[in-house]
Length: 610
Ligand code: GCU
Image (cartoon, rainbow, N blue to C red; front, side, top):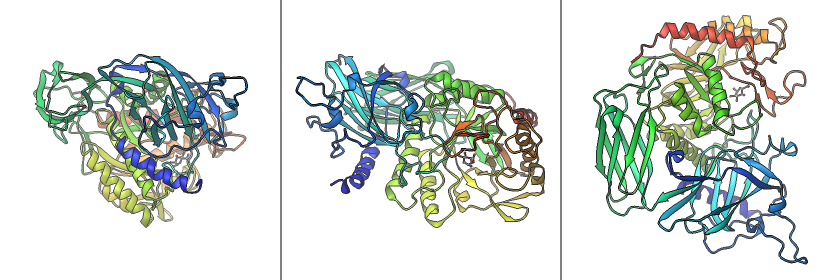
């Protein structure tokens, strides 16, 4: 039985996932009870508490057994070998690695349990929402099965109207972050495999018929038309839907079809367009006779034209930096909006107008923050290095993650690039996979740019060639290159190189950089010294400036980050040291080299205020 189980599970998981791809849009603007706080946990490397989770569909009556029962000893002679109430607690949201010293390196199963008192209203519907759990989660409420989710960085939810008790309720979740070849990401990556309930948990209270999803943005390449859709849930007949943008004097009323969907266009008279220099957002409200929701939305167009990237019709240079979703001061996954602010403020100090959120969907709040701070974003799914290309369920998982990411952040003006992967080898079985991903992303959102971080390679001794066939499918050609660090000799030798790029499209250098231990000073030939890193940046700026279609760069990386692959005892100790800022927040010399370059670039592109 054990042998069959895993493969059945993986198929079941994906069937289940596709059913879950749509979740309530803009959950933070809805009525909800936060279930964040201290959750009990039991570490269970042997999965002793697991007695199976047959089938996918929630089964109201079926009792789950195992730890899902959350049993308490009733009599002195009863044998129970676990007790959540007496178990220690972890903070939710938060990864377990940074909260329990014994779990720093732990990969496996941890059980979470949380009690909450609640009195459901008869005319309301309830949804249990998880904004991210890494990696695989088996979810139950009151010993009733809700479902399974795989994928560590995107939201999912279950309707629990029928499973809720009037009074005490308990949630039990089996979380497992074991790395597997067939997962997305696969079993090898250069960041810390933080496990657990890493983002907010909420119980959302919705009317019987409510506004589930919507998109409201400018039409593709069109500054004069707002277009979008609204998807209602729980309706069986068409409804009036009012979309109102009072400050812009814009509104429309449309009628949904029998499936609760309505599409609309609104001609624009006068509008302040969103840009990094002027991150103007408008209050937008959507109202039906049973529900309403308000959002803060910026309106801008993004497109490419030849070698240019046009923001609101004007050419822009993307002064960027890469970033992991990690607060180095913890170190751990961001636990609140302030952790996100810390990171984006550092990017602003670097004079960035663009941030590549690597290599997986970051905290939902980060995109909203970027909207308000005037930072453009590149968002990505963790199709990273050597994915299990020929495994259909791996492709479905990857497509599911890009679908969820685009669904979650489609109303964010800051988001201009969807990236379908990073450093994937150009081999036939990968072509098929990545072309399918590109097609899905284009189909899901034609108003934004689709890209991926490609690999450059040396054709001959001095030519860096970018000829990855996937480039054909991408709006912007982006590639990573580490000349002066992993190849190409010493920093001052890299200027002998030239680029041969087989696509006449805008080019973004999606990674470039070098390691340095903050505070370690020596000559520029000494690895891991700030001077070496500084020299790489100075020479790289000259090298990449040779690219005539260069329209952006996102050096690797804003701040040092944890990685179990970096174990040099003198300089790394579990940290990737390519940050421009150290893990204690100290700016390294290279930070100022890049900042200066960006000041020049800003003047050069001289983006006019709208
Ligand atoms: C790779 C990869 C990063 C990694 C970096 C490095 O290009 O995309 O995830 O951390 O290089 O080697 O530091």
